[in-house]
Image 1 (cartoon, helix red, strand yellow):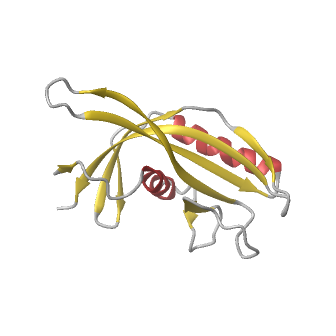
Image 2: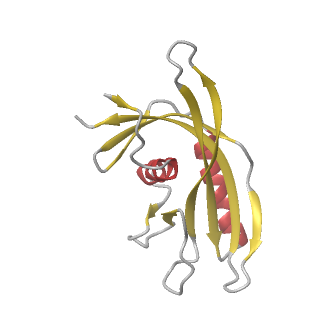
Length: 154
């Protein structure tokens, strides 16, 4: 059954897809490339190499003349942080290339909710955010939009 209610944010859906694709790990694992949603801790216990996915402004893509349904492509941003410039840029490039490929009918499950990632479009290339003043970490960003269908688990 398709629902109109969003259970999880687009940033959480994108992160779950990246976890299922083995490109990032969960923040509790503290394995290679732990990932966060909405904010990335900046503590001594947090690895230098980490990513965070944020929800950003989406794009209205049209409206059905019959039903009045509005189609929105939800916005997201990935922030890649690393102690090494080349390692951080390479990770950002890996994520960019993965998300740039045609994505259709990719199913992602979070808790009891199932989401279909219909399409992903990059809205920027990779760009440097510079170096942090406190821990000598380099940061990179990439942005995109996503179209997601929501389903209820049977």
